[in-house]
Image (cartoon, rainbow, N blue to C red):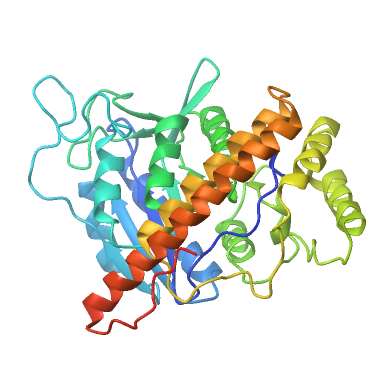
Amino acid sequence: MLPDFIFPPPQESFEQLDVVVCGSAPLQREKIDAGNDLIDTLQAIASGVDRPLRLHVFTDTDLSPLLNSIDLGCEVIAYSIDSTPLLTANGMTSIGQPGRSLQSPWLVWMRDALKTFSVDAVHFICHGHLSGLRGSLLFAQSPTQRSDDFLAGSVGAVELANFLIQIGAWATAFSAPTDNHSLLGLRVLADEIAQTLPGPMMMFDHNKAPYGVLEAGYRFVHSPYPQRPPYHEGGLYLYCQPYLLTRSFQAPTYAQRNLELQDLGRRYARNRAQIKTVLNTYALSDDVQSSQPLTRSKHLSAVTAATERAAEQIQLHYQKLIRDEVVPQKTALRDLSIAMETIQQFRQALGEVERERVGDEAGNPLADKGDAS
């Protein structure tokens, strides 16, 4: 499906694709299923990505030994947490204190461990939970402890989106475990993330589809060229921007590009109201283009990637104001223009800082590996 707002391709590194995989299950879920789901998912990702790949794996402590028995044909970094307790006597996490954007010890652990990497995608293999109209992920209570409290590791869309922005990830994926607690809860959460972050989002259910479908999903999302999306009724749930679906926006005139977008809307939008929303917000994306290939930079730094995700949230905010008619479109466009000019100045300044940092580390002041512009 198309999301409600149009965005250009993200800046990403073409040297290597960095994918984070997090697999966790509360104590009441079967350990053997969690381990098999993790291994099958890693194999599907490694088979589906047709370029250099680095996998960052975070999982429950008692599942970590499984990673020693597989060869994925790519670089794999399996993270282990130190012996510092993550839980205090009252059950609060010692690293996720009140008032901070991240409360989950899992998310704090992953964010801190990944701070030197530019992350492209994050894949969660976790149980879903539905509370009212809100979905959430169920982790073990902490990476070192699988608690009897089934809901101790619950993480909702707001905290999850904050985590993805902070690590700079532009794509998200979810897998429903074999004995998933709530498929609906996971679907609701996935939809919330797809409407909060403009990048691609996949949800895969291997109870309804073979892992070859997940492999095809990764090949589609992370291909350097637009192509036809994979399809499996009930097994794959996919949101993506039009630049992945077709060679759209290369037409010479706005009218021709608009016709292409209308055609995409008829095929992939949820309803007529969404088609209208997409067309109305297209005017905000004058820089939408489909390059060949879609990648942008030889090496993208972690700081640059996180800055890009923050900038996207500002653009998304103004697109929502126009969609919901909170302020006149002319006012929103003017304010957006001012905001994006400021962000561009910040990007340029950040690019200079990154170039100096990389040059100092390499002993070569002319080195150019991190460019926020």
